Amino acid sequence: MDKGKMMDSIQIDGQKVELEAGYPVRFSCMEHIEQELDDYVNDFEAAPDTYPAKAIDDDAADKRCRVCGEPGQIALLKEKGM
Ligand SMILES: [Zn+2]
Image (cartoon, rainbow, N blue to C red; front, side, top):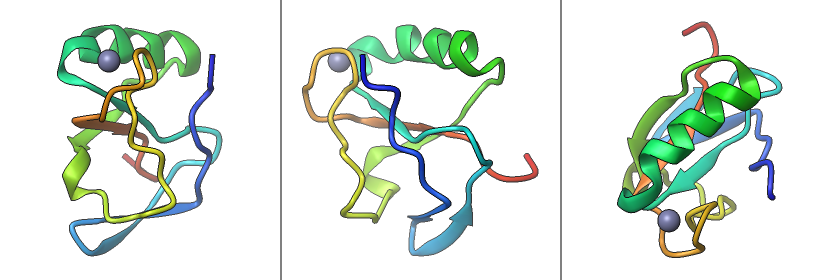
C-alpha cells in the first residue's frame, strides 16, 4: 500500500508548516480515520497531527483516502518540533 507522500512543508490554511522528515502526509475519509490513525502510529511510532483535508492548500497533495480511494476528509501529518 502507498506509504503516503513525503513533503518538506505544506500549506495549511495559507500558512507554511514545516513537516518532520520521514513522516508522510496521508489522507483518510471519515470511515477509515480510526484505521489510518492506528496505521500511522504502527508505521512511524508517532501519533500524527490531524487537520481537515480542506485546510490543506497544496494542490500537489493527493487527497484521496489511502484505504478506499474516496475523497479524504482528514489529513494526517507530523509537524516539525511537535
Ligand atoms: Zn476510506
